[in-house]
Length: 257
Image (tube, one colour):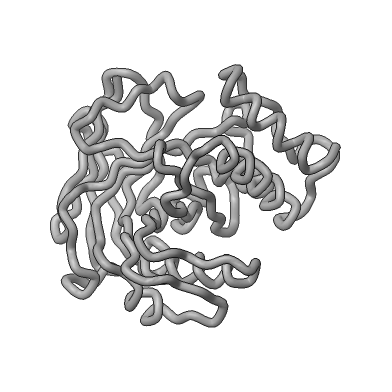
């Protein structure tokens, strides 16, 4: 089975609303490079269909998420304009197959970032503002039975994002020390701290820019980067209200309809 064949299966899952069996259990995909080629084949199709890339998401940057999904390294995916929901706007659960939510720190870039060889300080210099955020992750792989190549091929299990409007300058706080309380319907699901994300969320941003640089790509000014979850993810359904509270950064809330 070719890269394009597998990309077509994933693209079809968005339309049919039917998850597929793990890609890693069949022939054709064994390496990370092959998985990213499948992701990019879908990105190319979406761009041809008129969708606009607005940024990237980094996944599996915390030990909590790697343990939850049984994966041992970070990955990345693409974020499109139509994947962002305004805080306070109901998020339609029906857009997703098997959604989960997770709290994140988001960056809006004021300058391009082109690796490899970038440091955390280089990453910080390209950040225009920092925001509290919620990511909606989703999987086109049945029952979340994913390995690393499955989630990479599936656009890093991306679904959507809610980014708080209130900006904070990157120098206003030590992001490694930022604390987070993650709640669903008022009940605490988990707590985390910025250092759980690759030592600091800025470290995750530098990793992404360097990884893209190795592939001949760069991060662009104006784009949004979700740096990875501070905690484990929580399954969501219609009626849930999800909040992420960062005492030194702000809060963000999403209601699922």
